[in-house]
Length: 280
Length: 255
Image 1 (tube, rainbow over the protein chains, first blue to last red):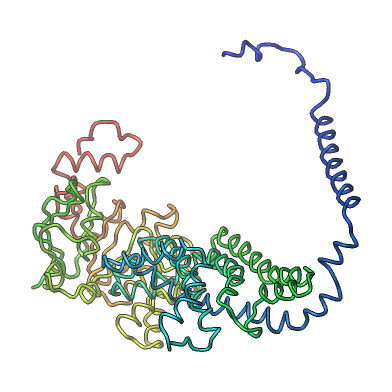
Image 2 (spheres, rainbow over the protein chains, first blue to last red):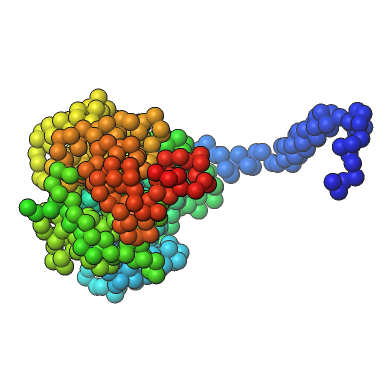
């Protein structure tokens, strides 16, 4: 042994001046004290009147209703859900192309993913909102602004969803495809009846995460530019805030985003826990 | 008479590794053929070549007289004649036991929902897991899963059943359930090609035992001869190791 013979030394264990139990107690007490001091300082320095006036102004908040729900929240949900549905199916197609035996399909899928995952969403929205209508004159997206927004969010989310689906498809054990093929199913039949249903179950938690991210990304579609009836939560709060110079509407908009994303985050955690227990 | 399965000069290589070095044998209708041999000897690869889950590098595979290795063969149609049971069961995790057994009947054989369910229940009954029809694979024991997998293969009305080490992934106390189902199938006259380590099963149920080592068939014949009185040194050595695992280091016992 290199540590010279501590084991050999008999007798009572050496004692520190403070027992570990006492030391832990003191350490905890200090941590609580620091916390209390910081809170006290913030409470004392802050100008609560003006904070409340700017961020939690009841009169300003009243002006935001009911529009923030009937226009802002409604549009945020419509934009996000329509973009997600489009991105879901487009992403599935891109994922299958990415795993295809046909080289050009793989190449197209890879280029698509790299472009739309690599570009900031706001760049895609600008191009779709301004460039496309001018370049393709006379072409109109159906149900604008909903059509354009769904396309913009769908194109961006499809790139992320494609990679999620690819991971899911590759996570399905090889034996599943072999069993399906040995029963006489064709490659395509095995993919759609056996592989994809299981792949989607595997990636439900990350798919839900993508939905949360898309709720937040939907705030960027304001750059496409619409009239008041097309405002989503962010643009609705932002326009009220700039009109009045008061941030309460933005706080409200933020609150409604959290109303959407926090429950979804909870769902993701539940699903992940459930998968860990092995029951998908 | 056409052979149920016939392999002619079968070779299979994975890259530089030659796993099968020219295999020739036949399985006659109604026969049970057990393939034994050390791991890495190519037994599983051989079985997977029969239904072309592995594409042979050279040689021919005939099933019921039709050549599966022919370049224009409809492999999906040909595989319907071959039921396959895997070591890892490979039940479809998103489907109940019953749906596992009906899905290929409905999608491949285009049977109606009722007809498929009837065939499925008959086969689940036969393998003794009819009461688990509504359960999902994750809720079943390994032995139950493997029996559902057998029912799934049987429901396609195969001419030949292929078993790839069907009991190797099972807890010891569950092996018997699966083996007794297989024995019952053999008694009913099913043509079976079985890769197995269960010497007792091979000895009692097989019509022919094949001993494989290093990609070739070393010895084949009736179980009493191949297992009871092996002629080749490699067969003796292998059987000695398998039958007396605690004395594996001793020299092969004189038989």
